[in-house]
Image (cartoon, rainbow, N blue to C red; front, side, top):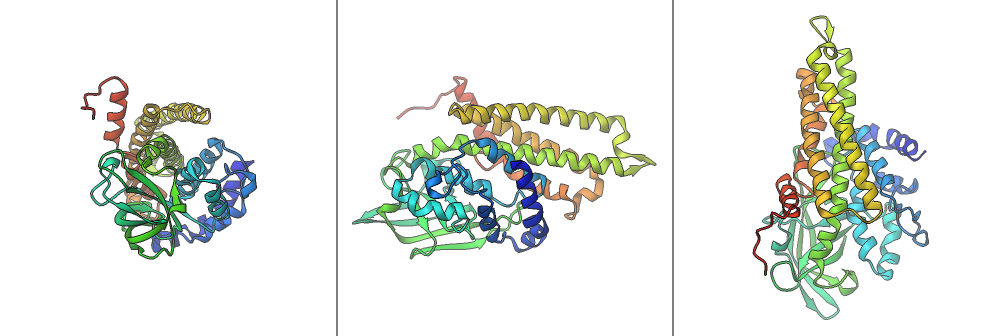
Amino acid sequence: MFRESVRRFLEAEAVPHMDDWRREGVVDREIFRKAGEQDFLFMWADEQYGGLGIDDFRFEQVMIEELYRAGCGDIFIPAHNRLVGRYLGNLASDEQKARFYPGCISGETILGIAMTEPDTGSDLAAMKTRAVEDGDHWRLTGAKTYISNGLIGDLFVVAARTGESGRRGLTLFLVERGMAGFSRGRNLDKLGLKAQDTAELFFDDVRVPKANVLGETGQGFYYLVQNLAEERLQSATCSLANARAALDESLAFSVERKVFGEPVASFQANRFAFANMQMELDVAQVFVDRCVTEFNADNLGGADAAKVKLFCSELEGRVVDQCLQFHGSAGYMDEYPICRRYADARISRIYAGTSEVMREIIARDMGLDFRKRD
């Protein structure tokens, strides 16, 4: 029932507008408000704030699957709900929940997270954005880049250095739209995910009230690491959903398209390729479902999250590439969904931790850790 309700919602409110949103480089923020009206936002939040009190990742999994099936993966509702939202869920004080949850649940407040800097990607400990204590405020200075929901976002979880270098001394702040000194750069022109706004954020001596510190001062690095397992599970779910949608579309196309008078799908080499992709996707589905079960039980470790993210993102890359090939020249045309899926898929091996970083995490979990300790 939930899947069907999400499907109907997307077909009515999102699918008809996706081409326009891609041309504009940003979705209409009204899609968040309309999703809020359907109770699709912050479903895990307590009922006292207007949520449903349903903290089961499977609901988010279904939403992700339907977003990609409908060709609406550019709408970053899952990032609002859990990639960013769970920072509030895990760390926000009662006062912060009362202040911010209602808008997040209704869709009036759109969330983003600002970690990446111009010279800092996966190395979170190398952040340079800094906050200095000043009475009942912190003064925040620095820049972030590649920030999802960067233009339409209203509330950002911003990581900044408040202490010594390295892992110690990072703090998370809640920066609100309209704070003096907080500005946004251009909407970055990306390879894929064209309707999803990605921007630069600038902080020029922004006075952030101490009431907007998220969690404990100095513990930001550890909070970021703790939330990475969920972020990587979400990324794996997106990769698998995009790959499965690409296979379904390619199969339908290859049955209809003819070469030498025969359907493309009728040739043995192609049938075997379809069979291999179906097999791998089914195996990946079992892996993702198991990780979701472990996550719901609070048992998903960092290494397993890295494994599922790595496996699914690289599988996605192989599948969409083969599916585009089945389309021939048509697959290179943007009017066909496979072209957009191919472009969208490339980021999956980069964001939420690159494939190389995932392999490093897995290797360390195997005991292959030769780092010098402080």
